[in-house]
Each structure stands twice: as structure tokens, then as C-alpha cells.
Length: 154
Image (cartoon, rainbow, N blue to C red):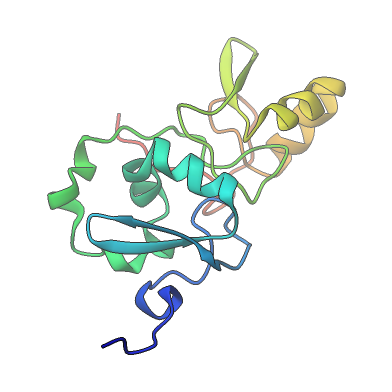
């Protein structure tokens, strides 16, 4: 007997954990470790499937269904980048698997190949804007903006 609950009723996240300002679509759902996770689109589902534990570690506040499972999931073994967001699309999370460009001898991660193309059109302007927004902690001159970078243990 079905209770008539949609996947939305069974998942705790209301915003996409990858494109973090986008609301979820109940048709874009993945089950991970017995928990349902909702996304805004199929692109985010594909990205999640590449690095689910990374997204849980970095965006845990948007994924309350995994609260208390940190040890079970082995999140302490996941190494996070200091950079959290794409400098071109600053509401999108980047991972070590994201495309990257070299800037001042450091890797700058971008959300997609389209973001790489946009960055490359005006790299100096892109860098200036990203540093002012506090999105590139790996680059000298990055503004300190709360919540824009990952805490990384040395």
C-alpha cells in the first residue's frame, strides 16, 4: 500500500546541493546510502554520482538527511579543496574533478567547460571579479568573505 508520498516528501533537501540557489525537482532524485537526495537537473545528478561524499562533506548544511552519518560515510577521509565555488557561476560547487585552468601557478576550478570558455575570454577581468568576491582562496589577494571557501586542515 502506497502512502502517496512523492520523493520530495522523503528527502530533506529543498535546494540543490550543487547549484545551491536552485530549488529541487522531484523527478531529479538519487538514493545514496539509503537516503534520497533531490537535485535541480540531470547535470547535477551526473555530477553527484561522480563525487557524492565530497558534496556531502562540503554542502552538509543543505543535506540534513546525512547529519550524524559523517563517520559512517568516512567523510573525515575526504580531502576538500580550499576553493568551494566556481568563479564564473558563483552559486555552483566545484570538486577536484571539475575542469580547471592555471592561474599564477595555482589551479582554479570551474563548474563546466562552458565556464572555462567564459573565464578564458577575459581572464584578467574574471580573476579580478573572483578575487573581490572571495572565491579563490588559493590565489594571493583573495578577499575574505564568510562562507565562500572551504575550511581545509593543513
